[in-house]
Image (cartoon, rainbow, N blue to C red; front, side):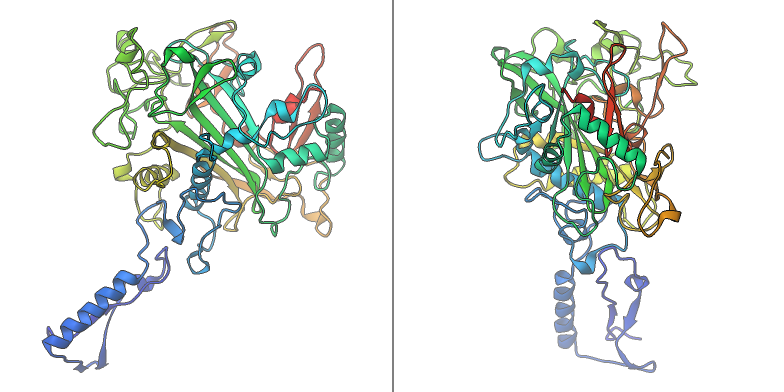
Length: 545
């Protein structure tokens, strides 16, 4: 074959490029022994046509990016289903981690987007105390609702879930938590009057009688229902004191003023959403990039005096820059680099409590107990890879942490024009879901289901398949996910022994280790606060009447 024989690549129209034909080449010829011959002018024209055709063809982006699968996760609309916006020709044969990551990130960008009045949209959702009033009926706010200073200063809203520890920032101020729900979540509770303990008790009884038909099951409960499902958002807030102090760095952090003129900086956000193929909800978590450094070397957020600036590689940011009492010497929300060095840190990594740990722990240490909580330096045990090493082909075997790091970088580089610059300093740190083999989706919305660690589906009777029993699913995504501001001491690898009682240990737990597809009701009593759960949500424990 000579220089005038055209060899053209076979076109690949599958966005994931899984077809074997993607790597083949074919010669245009009349027969094996008679290659086509053209003049140099014709060859030049054909080359231009091939180049144009190649440019027009959709070349799949490398790695998990904002525009993978032929859609753009830019928060322009709220996605109700995980496959929303994907052209049929580019829909993967089954859901992938990247697909769910995109779904979560798009909805994060939508919810933090401006509501038209200068506030993020999620601040117009109903706060838990609107949903579960101490008397009367729930009232949907319908518009921006500021943080409630009285609520944020209550012990129940300063305790982390699971271990009830309190987290103090570098200024030794207690972190507070706010929980809000969307209209489908609110309407379901309101319509079924589940803001009353008596009705929650009845729902738990119905669940025990038949865990397929009875109990709490938020919408959607059918795979054919593609409307926006129930959503719950939990946020963590760092206290910056009085508005007159001007301490919150509003250019790189979202700052809210509560109804008592106190300022809070958004440190973390859990976004939990039910869809038509995910009755277990999709669990995603976001954090401010300056919350805490990686505990170990080689992560994407290395331990240093100042956290790196994701918008300007090689530069740094300082969330304490408005302080003048020495805190400005370290740029993190929950890690004081100066104190860490004084305690013997080597400037590269930070030892944390593990079951087999022998070295002295400097991070994620014992926080004390109420009311004498102690400030501790926090680091992330599960590191996200560096973006420069994370954008790999999706059809290769790799951990979800790489997809997340790649997507975070892609969002920063391709952020929607209307997005305030401060939101570029927040990142997805994990996403967890359930999967049934290679089928789409996790547990469907109606009925109980099981997975490793949970099997409590009493009297499961699905009409037509009573003998099959409840479906069983497997964890997928970031199966060791923990937010450093909400599950500080339950991160992967943690083994924190209570110094006052060595038999009590706090260790790692994932989302599905705490939240389960059951309806239970244990009303408050003289000996305890009680506990309610319905369709994965612990919010029912806040029923006030």
